Image 1: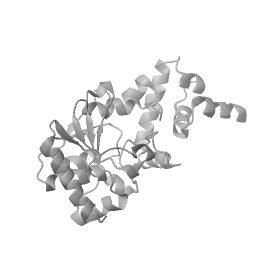
Image 2: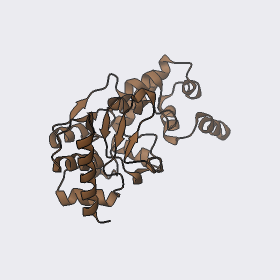
Image 3: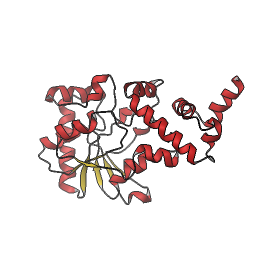
Image 4: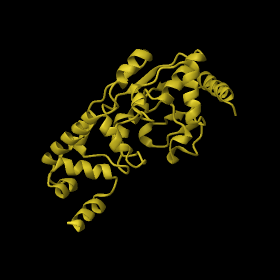
Length: 254
């Protein structure tokens, strides 16, 4: 299928959704996929509320980019920043992504959310429907709507070039995604460290937060394993391993 065919298909899908569903809004992360969805909605003349949930750990310049290029976007500020959550709850892991639930997903409770999710982004996003019902009780019947679900990376970038659309500053730094810096869901080896190298203030802030959290919580496993050392805690977090595997290995080495 050609890019133009996919554009037409996505527009027809969006138009059908806007015509037949209520309680709609567009989730705008500021990333390339969200940008495409935002401007597709513009092209069909849809006037929908647009929201961005500030995670407080996105790449520098993301909020400014959104305000300047997609000014209708309402930026929701969290009750607690990512760093305050780390201080209170510890570092999130792939199996304990409390940060997503609090900082991102809470904004879609009970709503029908149009998102830039695509199947090629990860294995976890494959096999979904174009309209996905959220079965979690906490989401109160929310639905996720994916108008560019079957677009490839190249098609997204071709559309952006074809329309002359702006993109977030993180892409000029070589990042291929826009999301929380150092997210533990990133599976590509070395990619998390690369993001922290691009945004070292994020690393320092995370390290400061977990150090403060461990000082307040001597009962945490990470506190006991590291003796409250923030740098060691961060190195474990970056490894993606369980504490038993990571610190057990270190113990054997010594």
